[in-house]
Image (cartoon, rainbow, N blue to C red; front, side):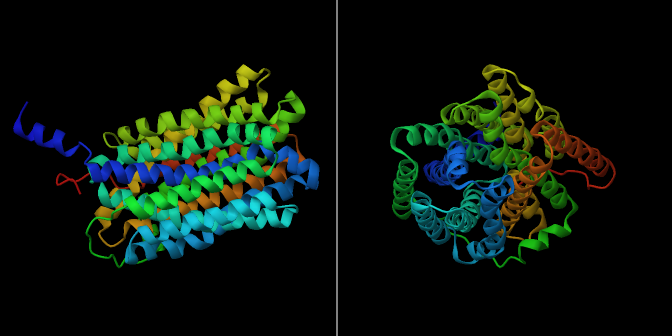
Length: 409
């Protein structure tokens, strides 16, 4: 093995600071998604108790995304200026507050406000946490690191849905949220005592929307929007559909969503690593197209095992699609040299938020007028049409992908 190969291999090994930082980010994303998904199997209970319409259930889920969208443009550039640690701690405190609100909610208004507060908190934690990863990892390691970090999202969702169903059946509606609140407090303490930011100049980025002048960033934004809309469309719709059509219990519904998020977590690091070797735009596009084809499987399955397999396929494709977007955004920021990582991942959060606004609302409104299978087929067809348009853009409009520079930046 040559000296240069040895040097490259040494650079690819994680230092202690990188291991600790990556572990903290995984924990932060895990806590947020645990709280987000722990309520999914409890939806039929809230629907029976409060009697909301399908549209109102869509509003409940979308309120998280509205808050995320509104607050992210503030927290992204702020973390570039003051550092990542303070916004993360503030966000974790906000998550703890939202869990207490969930536990004592007895009206749809309180539930929606709690979801809104959670979105505000996520705007702080997600943006700063992802930017912190970009700070401590060089570009050639960033794809793998971001892919691994996404396992925090998938693991939180994986555990949240079945755990929420089990805790609900064991101890009632308050227990899942008390449990999550305790974990959030532990995570905040770990950040306070263990998180150490690298020495760096405070970045004066030109703002979140500056990057949208780059056609490649716009392409990534469209991919995020399609993938997130597809995923969140299912959250207010699929649990009720499975309860009505297949008589699934909250615990079984939790396992269906658990299968989806398990494969999400398994595929994300693989796609992140591939994005460091091959053109990430092609990887994203293939992922979205396959996702559109797989979505109808969820509503045409006839048995539990078919439903679990369908959920596993959909989850893997969502992870495969989204993972390359994170590392690619960081590389585009390096090449632009005027944007900060905080602003870049604020942009990711904003389109993530738009996707989870559109998804639940679209799912709720469509299923007020047509059957769930018809709604899913309409959405899948629409996604395929957009994919065809993006494929044309990829072929003719985007600049040739240069990847990571030779200096590793």
